[in-house]
Length: 77
Image: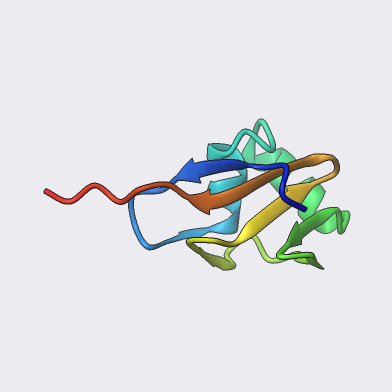
């Protein structure tokens, strides 16, 4: 699956629940609970149900037909 958007993150990792919202894969925290409980969230092709799962750069997250990758350039100060 290569049809996804790279979503920049500030740190080297981000929690799945936060990333779902940041990547516009869901609209609210309540929706995150529902999609995770429903088993329709995949991380790197495998079903994930833990909202607190730590994602790292390069991880690919999909919800139904929407897909995004944890990525982007890190800005150094």
